[in-house]
Image (tube, rainbow, N blue to C red; front, side):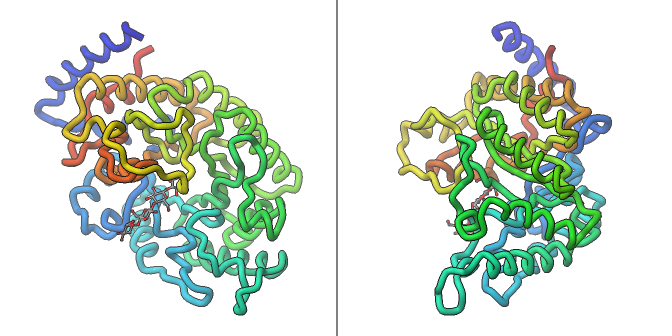
Amino acid sequence: MIDRIISLFFILITTISVYASDPSPILKTGFNNEFLIGVAINRNQADGTDSKGQALILKNFNAITSEQDLKWGLIHPKPTIYSFSKADDYVNFGVQNNLFVVGHTLVWHSNAPAWIFVDDNGKGLTRDALLKRMEEHINTVVGRYKGKIAGWDVVNEAFEDNGTMRKSKWFQIIGEDYIEKAFEYAHNADPKVELYYNDYNLYLNAKRNAVIKLIQRLQAKKIPIHAVGEQAHYSLVIPTVQKIEECIKDFSKLGIKVNFTELDITALPNKKKEITAEVSKIVAYDPLYDPYKKGLPDSMLLKIAVRYGDIFRVFKENSSTIQRVTFWGLTDGNSWLNGWPMPGRTNYPLLFDRNYQPKLAILNAILKPIK
Ligand code: G3I
């Protein structure tokens, strides 16, 4: 490890001098022969209000995911109201610029308005009625972007870390086959679109095994699934690179691709040891856990660069199984990790800083990982 830190220090120095005239290596060209390199974008980036951000996206990435605007609560806020304008901006931006456009997400426990699960009188829906509602939503949304969205996160976060099914309303009312139904409906709505199951912490054995069984069930019933998405909200130490690789190899045995769909690395201390991406787990602000408010020390930047370099070494070595690696946000200022799990912190998990400047130590580490 010490060797790597020393090497990275040299990389930092050489990077600064090499790129002094052209301060930004182009990310996507570095992975042309390996996998797509994507970024989650917000509505200001999609519609061009954030023109600097948009230019940076076009220069560096060849795949995009909408961070918010395709989620059920935003695109279908009331039973008979669909709100497509922001989602249209996103899809048009991708199509016009020949980007690989990802749809995130059709069925999720979060961002699912309460009305989905009750009838006009507030009475809980039956299984059949909820399936019908799910099918109508999927038909409408997938149908609208048929031929434009290249792949959908059909179901998001259906399992707990211990491998049991999350007791979401979808599960409670429909039962465990709600996942299969969602995939069937999405396939019927656009038979050519790729379909993904997306979740976090798939490096945990119990959770990964549950997802493997799900994929086998889908495959046995000939319901198409093209890839599994490991979200990859990681810390400096969790998970180990060995676990990341184990995950890739286990899914590749099923004959499907692995996508790393929401990559970011937090370097902030956390009150709890576990890492998760469960959006509902919020804790009150405490300055003790917000140490870099005034800026990130170089020593910490290097640690993050080393960690990114280690992870990308595994990605490159297993690139035949990986279709896409997507960062969850463009600049540090855009990251959800400033507001979660402790709202109000200043985090530094991404490739570009708050002034849209590339972090050359990280870019260099991921483009040329040290063996
Ligand atoms: O837009 C409103 C703004 O008007 C309001 O003033 C502000 C005050 O709270 O909220 C803003 O909306 C926030 C929105 O992000 C846009 O920034 C919501 O409160 C906040 O809940 C929402 O969080 C998003 C979260 O999903 C829930 O949808 C994060 O940005 C987004 O990064 C996160 O993404 C999820 C993936 O979809 C699934 N995997 C985990 C990942 C991280 O939680």
